[in-house]
Amino acid sequence: MKVIRGLCRVFTFLCMIFVSAMMLLMVAEVGYRTFFNRSIIGGTEWAQILLLLNMSSFGASILANRQVKVNILTSRFDPRLQVIFDIVILTLSALAIGALSAAQFGYAVKSFSQNISYVNIPVPQWPFVAVFAMSYGVAAITAVLLVVRKIIAAVKGEWELEAALEDTDELFAFGRTGVIAGVLERKKNGDTNAGGDIW
Image (cartoon, rainbow, N blue to C red; front, side, top):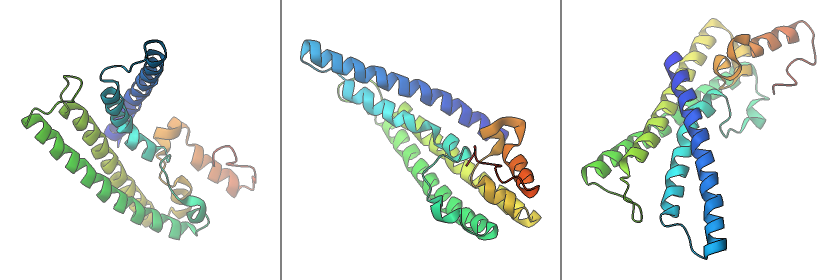
């Protein structure tokens, strides 16, 4: 899990750079159209590349429980049912994300072997597709590790803690403070305000 956390942090940092670059590109594109009445040559391709690379933080979004998830209903489930439901959803997600990653790796290899480049910029496609595929591969492995964690927690009978964590990796999201475990302990002790700043 340490390796996955490290990779997710690297991809998050890279995603911040890619988002900043895409914002600057859009500002430059608007300015170029305003003052010169023409678009930047290759601007569309660079925007596509940066948008593709922005998906690199997928694994981090899973660890931080920030992916799109319909938990308006699951949060009302009994802790046991919620954990079981999370295991099923994460397993299906890992399979789907892994399939997408494999397909993109295949396309990266094809792009490399056929020397495919973008139309308006002399840049090969395969490095960017490979980064995309790698980030999705990390996301798939992340989902699998969360499934393993949930199964271990279920065997230990830690249903309530695991239900509160949902898909969050507490160490990745909060550091070594043990926030969620501390909140559950405070709730057990009768603190009705515990957790209001987290959920």
